[in-house]
Length: 104
Length: 338
Image (cartoon, rainbow over all chains, first blue to last red; front, side, top):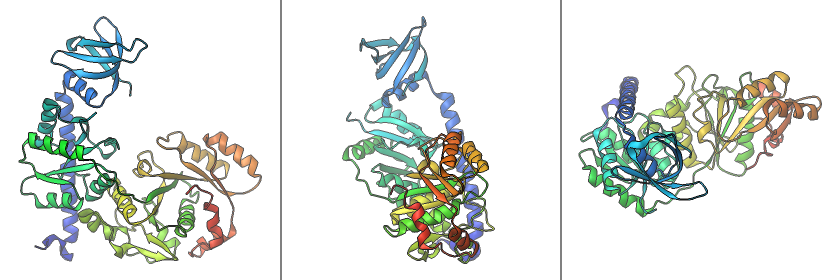
């Protein structure tokens, strides 16, 4: 079926309608992004970092910094392959993480 | 890792967040991005799950992803035929309506991700830009395009938002211009041959007069669509702006600078805010001692000029007469790496 809005007399109005529709869609997406940020939990942030294979610096209770690649996020802890010279694997209780910084 | 890397395009529709929740719960795929803007989708993604209900999702963008070897799953609202048509025109590998279950969508993403995607070669994109003050951006774009057109299928497109002068400069009638091809671009993701004009072996798409300039999404779509049909796309990008949409997608950026103290200071003002790949600095209209100008350019911009183009009366005359620059002047731009 031919789109009636392609008729030459209606082209201009169809463009305007489309532009307005795009503005609505953009506003909806912006709202979705804001909602996502507001609902995001620390555990979800850690899952994101694991999926992206990011190297992170974790600040944990007591002030210690742990740098390494997040390799697993469990129900109550996470596992980091440290990138320092020890190269050790360390498990950290999620509730002890106070800050996460992405290194790369 | 065997788990495919999947990106979604952040959407207000529930299927997108349901998909991410299911992906995390099953760990069948890795969700590496929930993109709010096109630039957030990196080249290392295996699969993109995208809704047709996002303003910047266009057939050209979907094709660009497919060409890069990324598998695309498109999701459209149930019964939304125009939305489905966008996904079809964009050649999405799978198209589902949004009543699909999240588990089914995760399974589809996993399967597609493991199957791998072939790439399709596209033309190189070169953007010619520069500071304010008429340093000769359009002239350099024209010379560059003619210079390349002898070796490969080349198109020059005028995306100068402020002063699109290509049609006037080349002595072409103002219409048809790129605005006449926007509907087809939007609906089909292709450039209609009606807006392409041929001059001496070079294809030309002229900019639009008296109508609103194209937005960032459309500018990118035009360039991507042309890069499917041509080996080389030369963009007359107009004065550089910090939010320039074309510089980040370009394979090469040519920064044209007038070889005068004022021109160098203006170029330095651009370079200081520059992000992304290093541009090729072209010093235009050089007069006087070249060594002194070179040293001043290095000092002002921190860049090693790629080309130095002396003041050329033939270029000035051809511009004043709105004629094609003589072939003898094209050589000035042939020094740029192919």
